[in-house]
Image 1: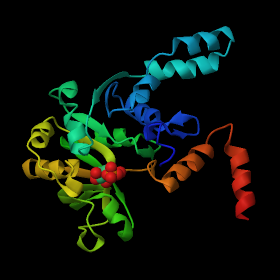
Image 2: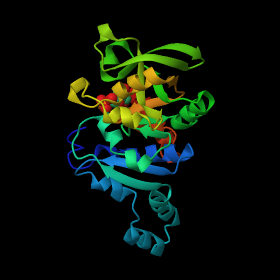
Image 3: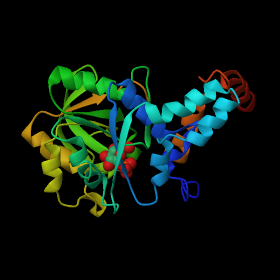
Image 4: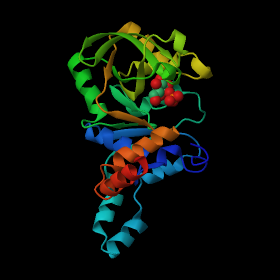
Length: 271
Ligand code: G1P
């Protein structure tokens, strides 16, 4: 997403009026989790600023009687308990997750990659939590992708055991199409047990020389049953031009202030 993400962290690029990271935090809160740790990297302080109170702006909006906007701004700093840890070097998602070990402690937790916006009637994370509670095991979100796209994702092998539900037997990070175990891709939503931290601490670099969460999941799957759930909803990849656009259109067609005019506009240019 360069040059847009040169100065503005890509997680703050918006869908309509709301930064991607806030949409992901809202999904977490709607799923019933209120303690959130954001793994940041150097130069991404604005991410945390977004969730801090902005007293001058709040006072300004209050004095002008703009109560709706005041609520909108206040919500960003009150909707969850947000803490941060810094990943000082970009060594991969597995390494990023390991930085949150102390913040998480000894209990199951969720990982959400904010590039992935999951537009679902029931929050994607909640869908996974329901499976995890029923099966008492770790779960990742799955989505079927085109054969030509498999090399962009972690791809799983597994056996279907219920509607949308797979027991995973293998996985590989970004395989070439001719070596892919399936077309089922891992999407950036994971429900994990704390033992993943020990696996990550012992991990070796994998694909692209980075510490891959996918590799740690493979090891976790050797120790206990691991599940994949083909979530109900649509995923938009905010790190991709097309995904960025489809997110704007999907949300724009629902927002009361944009839906009708956007629909007419799209109809006019497509006819
Ligand atoms: C990451 C994960 C990959 C997963 C993808 C989902 O890749 O490593 O396994 O399929 O997110 O978006 P990234 O998109 O960071 O390259």
